[in-house]
Image (cartoon, rainbow, N blue to C red; front, side, top):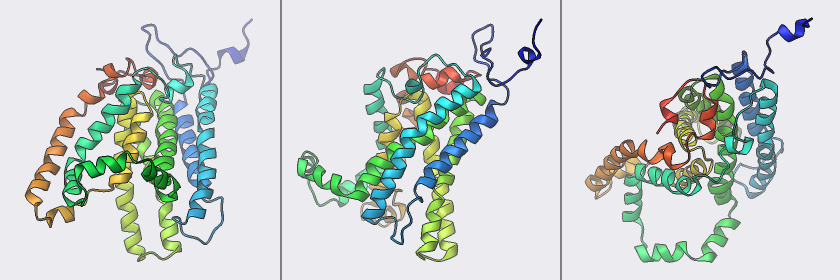
Length: 322
């Protein structure tokens, strides 16, 4: 005689593969995935405020404390994915680390090609920076190879936050951990567009500090917050695209660090530059080349087909094919 419990469908069912081998997500997985991502985002942002302080966010003492809490949350973030996998019963072929983009296959292309693609997009700002830089090309090379230069950078808390800790932890939490949980309940394209919303909203916490320290008018602060949300959401979609296409965490991290270094393109300065025609032409050329190279340089064929996160897709997606 069969027990009633054996006839009741639940999230722990392992019957998730159709007769033709396609992944079939269990019922209710989307609610679990979205709530898991929301909890993870709240944990990340909340970790920044466990320390009570009257000092601004750029003070070295504040940065060091936040390093501690955010690194703890980031180190524990794979537990969210593991718990989600156990609760939903999703049994992917790739390992947990591979799903999170931590693997060796295709590593060299993943280090070089996405960063190169991002630098192409920033062709205009890079040319503008080169024109305005007082150093010669060889001077720049000598500085880049000087160990004392990097020693100074590593002692600068703001540099460490912007170029190392923030890119690494944010990409780990908001891409490597969230996308494997979102892809099974939606197409990779939908997950790519949904994931940045958590990332964008997570940056709204800057409003609290700006209001707290009265760094501008209320309307100005909220307008800046809306702009930052829009910018970070678009950027988040881009790094999510890279993660899905390459199946690697390193590419999004390096692109994030590079974009933090470059900042938002200074279009107003470019319009007033003595060589504005050349610079604006480079801006346009960079955008056109970026669009032209977007899919070729992220072709999954370079990184190992299929990329691990794409094995969780319930429907075929153009993002996952060569």
